[in-house]
Amino acid sequence: MSTRRRLLPDGWGLSLSEIQALTGPTVAWFGLFLLLPLAVVLVYSFLGYASFSVVWEFTLGSYTGTVLSETVLSTTALTVGIGLVVTVITLVFGYPLAYFLRFYMSERAGILLLLFLVIPFWTSSVIRTIAWIPILGQTGIINKTLQSVGVIGEPLGWLLFTPVSMAIGYLQNYVVFMAAPIYISLSQINKDLLDASETLRGTPLATFRNVTLPLSLPGVAIGCMFTFVLTIGNFSVPSFLSGGQGTITTLIYDSVNNGLRYPDASAMSIMLLLIIFLFVYALLRRVDITAIAQD
Amino acid sequence: MATESGRERGSAFARISGLVSFRRLLLVFVLFMTLYIYAPIISLIAFSFNEGGLTFPFVGFTTEWYTVLFENQGIVDATVRSLQLALVVTAITTVLATSTALAYRYDFWGQRGLLFLLILGIITPGITYGVGANLFLTELLGQDAGLWLATPVHVVWTVPFAVIVLLAGFPPTLAENEQAARVMGASRWTSFRRVVLPQIAPTVLGAAVFAFTLSYNEATRGLLLVGQENTLPIEVFTIAAGTRATPELFALGTVTTVFSTLLLTVGGLLVFYAAD
Image: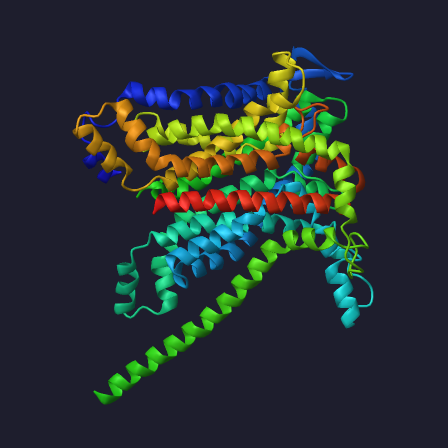
């Protein structure tokens, strides 16, 4: 930032009106098509509902009747639990991946491998999710292989349509998106600091604990933020890899799909958004993620 | 003194051998992760050519599922709609994201707000956003459900990613060259047309390709908006929700993956080439 400011002294940068002209259309688009719809969701969450249609009267019914109901509360707890567990698992698998890319590969090779790992992400998430079925199913690759080798007699039932298959699906979705920001944070660590730690006779473990890890926290925070938020908002994995027990996203979809219960869907959506905002806010308070955006 | 340096050498050796085995362990882990991340793609390709459908072991090679796929009028129509939508979304995204990214390089009031607005576009769950957009566009504004209603929703999804790609891919010398042009008397517009645009063109094209694939593969956001005019991912969702998985869908996944990969390789090369 500072270099740019020096390169473009007053008068050479963009004037306020030029900034407004450049960013205005995007801000307007997001205001109209993102903020307004979210505001509409908020309004609808306070409306009534009777026999397949919305009733325009103020009521807390969707909150007291639906959001605070046994089913929705337990599903919400399950969803948040899944989000936290998946975030931890993804961090455990993603950090070493980022560490390898940064410290055991050249810069170019690291970036190329990272890009290579992103390729599967560009297939529709629905298709990528159902692709696990013939791998994990009763007559799938894992069960048939284990059976033919003689390790197991009966196919393992807990591989598919269980929390295990959901975890496998979520981790595949997000591990690269955990690794990428951590990789960027690790790349920004000044090599001199690592040398200094070694000169001061820090063991590799001490160097990692006292230098590398703290300096990579902004990347960890961004990775955790995206993983948690995208996991609890994910629709494909609970739709196709769970044993029928959905998450809050499938509940929202069902309440619209079966009977157009928009106020209920809206109230649950607001709750989901609140959870996401709380999580993001808590993370941002602890770690300054804008550090990663600086040069 | 001698023992001192001997211990030094010993500990250095231990450290190096420790690092080597750690390195090997990590390497094995990364290879395993690569295989794991690619497992669904390998599964798609392998089972799409399997005579026995979605069961293992493979019994024989067949292209039957591809024939079934291309004869399925519903899927062909959905593909055409997805391509149309993705093209329009890409055009709008490119203009919005490029102008935003160009401005974002400078410090200005409201920059953080803009950043949060873009992040909000990514972190809002697709289904929540789908419900909101559906209520806003069809219930309040009275628009009929249809393919084009998904356009604004897809653009909100693709713009943040395009801005990230652009900011990462702008050549580092851009600001200097821009300033040089201005110092030598070029107007803002001339310097944009003759200096900035040629330098960022490959990155912009790369971001456009990125946006195209994102829109083409997006299902949840448009699910409640398109009505009967299913896009490809929504068609896949509908079929898979009804019958779980079919080999035909795996054939479709294979075709889509190959195309997406080709497109993105081209896009990635453009960004890489521009950043050099």
